[in-house]
Image 1: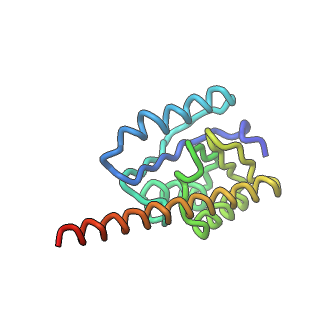
Image 2: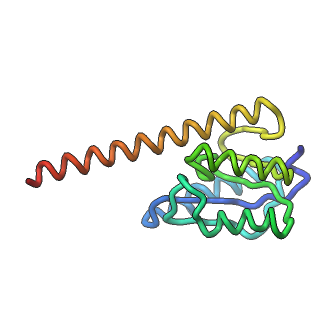
Image 3: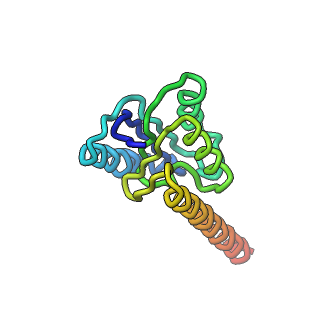
Length: 155
């Protein structure tokens, strides 16, 4: 599937709302630059989830994006800065992949070339999901370890 035949909509997510500026400073401009260079036409809305984890799909604009695809029949390519902005959970990422394959919706990363419409691209996408989930688990583990150390030193 050629994503240039479809308009693209940007999806951006940041886990910490205090880091909101990173969406506007990093993710969205990188997606806009990529779209210009790749000859993609961007359209609204831009889907933005600030303060939401990528470990689940309980995100307002993410859910809206899926609704636009599955219920309204909107056809567009999903453009993200990095694939881990979509998911840091293999199961949920595979669910999105199934939807995108069924509705012929390309997933485009501004920084990671993956084509989900061929076997190699699907394998790469799955591998990147595993790495994103692993990274998330490492961050969580380090945070829990640091909190336990603080509790011990506070006693």
